[in-house]
Image (tube, rainbow, N blue to C red; front, side, top):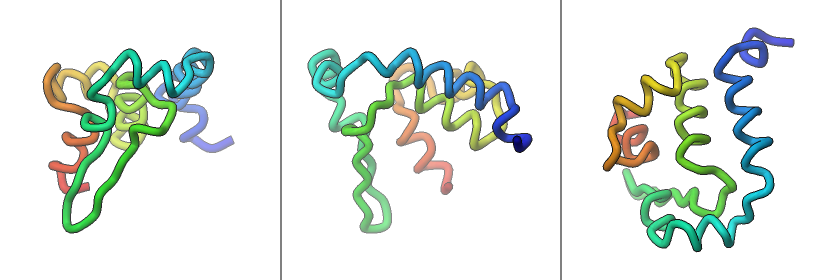
Length: 94
């Protein structure tokens, strides 16, 4: 096992994945009509669409925490309620 897979951020991400497994993609779009817009970003001529992935806001925050070594709560606070995690990540130049 690597340090990455033994980290608290990894455990949080795998826990969220297990909890989210029962939620279908069609249900995610039904619950969030703006999902396609919120889960996409465009920069430097690239269009990225994550809306068809089985991730929710918590999962994206957990991925960012894993990538940045920050606690998911800290990532959520930096993002704020109105700005989406993907937009935050794209604007940081990553």
